Image (cartoon, rainbow, N blue to C red):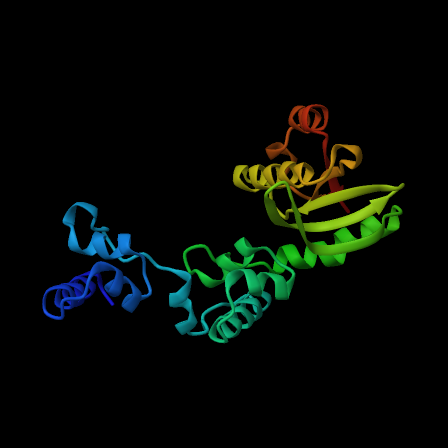
Length: 230
């Protein structure tokens, strides 16, 4: 329903049927403030805001070329149609709420995940196993200190926890995202057992975008290691 249609119906309920604001709010399943925002142009929203409830009517997209991403979206859309909330879907799939959100919304949906997923599973995981990492888990939700987000890989090496963020390219955005995620992951652990942090990149990546001075500063200032995967 458009904003104009909402306003017309609210005005009809208010002045033709005589309902008060609370009754109108209950009828729409909204707050009293929402009703007032439709009655008073001062608080009128510029456009209808998309909410999670709208997505129970989502159609499964057919244009996604990435098979892995397409399967993820289909699975989430089906769960939404069953009435599950973002939080329930995240819990069911052992993912973060943000991950669910990005698969449902066209504007935020990643263009593809297959290349990074294959790199992680076919090169990063074997590399970690080869150098002695144990108890390797992928796509792990880490919670604590008010944060809840997904880590690409969590493993144990020499009795210490390691968190690895996996990237296949090194744009400024990708680097900032990896660093930010790792720092937030670290805050979820108690100070007595802070994890070791690293970013895994393909060995063939263009090193000009990642100068040694930056690598050294990340390790010295943030205790984040860059590891190049053969």
